Length: 263
Image (tube, rainbow, N blue to C red; front, top):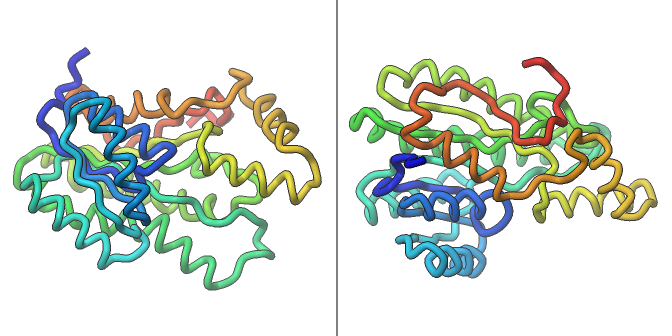
């Protein structure tokens, strides 16, 4: 299937590893040029080298903390200077610390708002004007199954991911007349570095082995296994493609059937 992505430019945030890297690599394989970022220049340069070697794509790699508005502004400006336009935006970030409500502070809530919600708002604000001028654009937010079915010990993520869903649903209706789609993609339990961090947290908290934590999750998933980042990236590439031009305002899970709700 030709996704119609050849010649497009995509900005993928937090792409040095995990889901962000998998999405960036998939888009490059489909013919996109890339703007990718992470907080550490060394890490994002290493990711860029790997993607270039595998796909021969043109990749601009920059250090940027997406929780800081000024760094997002510099990132987008550099991307526009290099490629003239940004056709596709994939918002993504690290997750806030795990823990129950009693363990959170006002500062941790403020940090979570900046990294999970403000980053999406800031990135969208900066890319939308040129998308509207061209009459084409794709915004895809990497959120979490927690936005539909809260996960124990993730109160910060549960709360703010749902906020992104509300923002995206509203924005999708506003920009649909301009040929721009806005969707959310919800990863379930997927083999990433972030999942390893959560496994370690629960293992220490409950005094059980990492294998026990992992096995408990696998029993909850109808497919009885964790997801692979490549499976997630395949849907992401479709949702930002020409083929998905009539899909907007949607939140689609890649979770092996973990979410039990009907909607």
